[in-house]
Amino acid sequence: MGNNNKINNIRDGYHLNSKYWQDIKKTRPNLNPKLINISIGMLLGDATMYKVSRNALIKFEQGYQQESFINHLFNLFKDYTFMLEPGKRIELYHPIRKGEVKSYWFKTFSHNTFNELWDLFYMNGKKRIPDNLHLSEECIAYWIMCDGSLDKDKKTMILHSQSYSFQDNIKLSTLLNVQWGLNTKVIAHTDKYQVIKIPSSDSSKFNNF
Image (cartoon, rainbow, N blue to C red; front, top):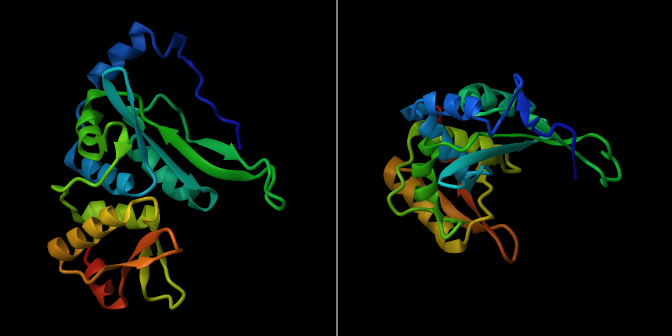
């Protein structure tokens, strides 16, 4: 997989690790509640985190069909990244789409404002679902935009949570049901993986989000 938009380590004449840019990072405020909730929703989906020295960062990535969504996220987090625009990953081996965009991505710079999210979602460097997670409306909305799709009947929604263990899927389904009065359930995706099914009867509740 290629990448034709790597981060340029020099910006405005200064290396990104220079005191100039590091001092600018320090002026950035902590994430506001809206961005925290959006981050949680995206981390429930495909977003990932990394710890660089003492501070964490978030990486967002979406498939080529979601370019407008990644641009929306980039605009929300533009004060927390050194990138001027999202990067592109190029498909190198696909028999039909070779040479075309595979996905769009960007990452924040490391900052202490992301450490709380790291501590919430990661244990020993591995993502997990915390027991005390609160799912706000914004959190669920962005999780769905990141990982949701309609089933074949065009009424039932599927949250593609197959990267999580069965136990974590049960935990997420229970959180949705208890906190929002939904009727989700964990169903088999393949012999090895599970996803979360949201029945059509719950659709009216999402319209209020």
